[in-house]
Length: 211
Image (cartoon, rainbow, N blue to C red; front, top):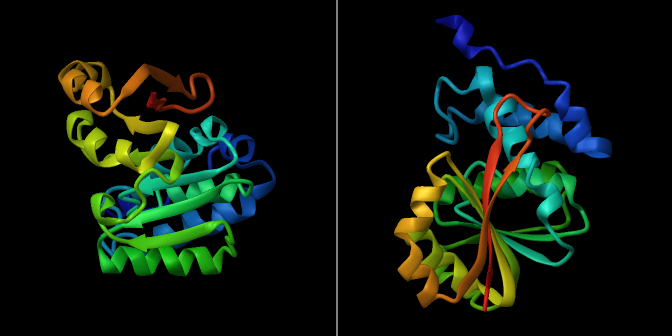
């Protein structure tokens, strides 16, 4: 049982994905390993796959972001928001999270990592007063697309982009969300598979533009 509590060794891909920002990536991962379970940010069995399934999984999204203002909905442990903020200092991140304990964690980590490109907003996405102000929106493991699109698409400026991390069932989610996508002006939808040949678990991203 104790083996499950050991932090996964840093994969070789971490250096490639974090580049010059690897030390901050390590600091964040170590902090999440130390306090994540205690704060209810990660489950008790996640340490042996923390780098692979969570941190690098999030890092793969960094090249999809453009300089501008990105909102991360349901930021939670900072996956992907803090990871992306570490790798992309040229992007301004607004981390949107309703739970006070998680907000405190995000704020503490932003300070500890000296991330001056991070703002934390304590609110549900639909109550965050950010309508039409963001260039891109990310989210990870929040909910199915038919539920997620109505709370993320309105945050984007016209021409803004959804960059939503999804699981293997994303194609089915797209089919179930067609009506919602039309209602919210979501078009040019595509599924990107990231990390093949780089990490052991690929990342799937639903990317689409909003009118």
